[in-house]
Length: 130
Image 1: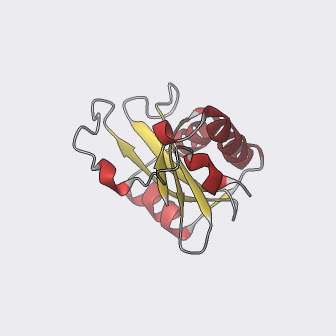
Image 2 (image 1 turned 30 degrees about the horizontal axis):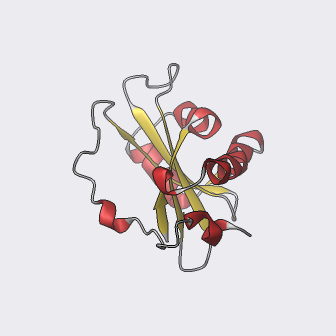
Image 3 (image 1 turned 60 degrees about the horizontal axis):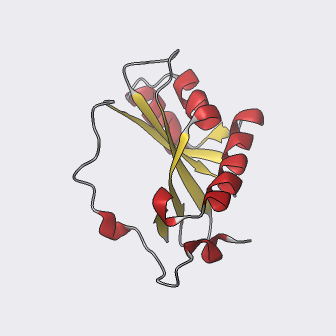
């Protein structure tokens, strides 16, 4: 299930972000995919770490295994300040799943919001509790 930030109650976002911030504090490892992206796309490790520490919550997703992922975004003033760094953190396996960068002017006007699920009950946060 994929949920966008405006589909979650703020208390759920706060809880998920506390878990994401642990990735910075505990220096979580990069997956092989994230490592390739950092190398191939020349993404500064500092920009990734800043995104985890200071980034804004964008999306929650749980995969078919039930692992929970959070997408965060941050434009670091220190590392590659001309880019916005996106990071997907796997909070159950405690690792950085992937990362990429965008132009700050890219506002994603063409995003297909049909990919985001809302269970219709009026409270999408019920599915996030563990």
